[in-house]
Amino acid sequence: SQQGEEDPQALSIQEGENATMNCSYKTSINNLQWYRQNSGRGLVHLILIRSNEREKHSGRLRVTLDTSKKSSSLLITASRAADTASYFCATDLGGSYIPTFGRGTSLIVHP
Amino acid sequence: DAGVIQSPRHEVTEMGQEVTLRCKPISGHNSLFWYRQTMMRGLELLIYFNNNVPIDDSGMPEDRFSAKMPNASFSTLKIQPSEPRDSAVYFCASSFEGGGETQYFGPGTRLLVL
Image 1 (cartoon, one colour):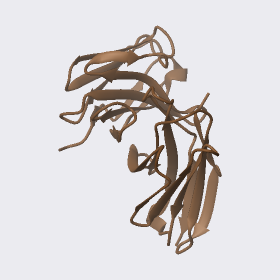
Image 2 (cartoon, helix red, strand yellow; image 1 turned 180 degrees about the horizontal axis):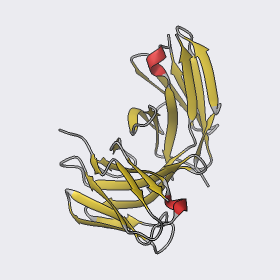
Image 3 (cartoon, chains in turn purple, cyan; image 1 turned 90 degrees about the horizontal axis):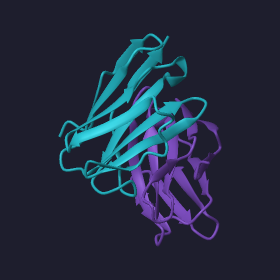
Image 4 (cartoon, helix red, strand yellow; image 1 turned 180 degrees about the vertical axis):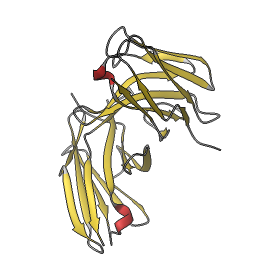
């Protein structure tokens, strides 16, 4: 079974709006990562957040981690058409460092 | 650095043929991963190497699939014989130390088995 599951499966917004995607997982983790995949391309790493961290920022990206709820969120502020992609969370299975990816959230940003 | 290199980028073959996918990880990375991505199953980890040694191959579908890493700069994923259900995009990724750290993905090989 997949460790991380993203929600929603699909998200459609207008340029300039914020986009929020969530990831839930089932067991303890050492860290959680978010990746982006443009159509026809490989995944690109966005942010890694460790289990002892609660929030990280990178440019227009903000990631939060709530280990008590076993969930994480990725916020993209002031979205752009170029942000259109699928976004995946990846978690390690608590100590194994074997990554498990969710099904992803498909984000469409309309210009 | 050129990033993770995969070849071929596209492969079309007939059922029963042998398929070999190739990967060159980023220099200095000691972990290598093979993934398969389909619409139905999403992104699946097939096998994970650390320091050229297979650590976890529990994701390899069946005996038709095999993977090798003869040295730190090269890995292959072989399917013999291939079947239509093997059609997918196969990604190779590498990282500096394990799957818990940032993984760098190659562009993928799009495989179609007729």
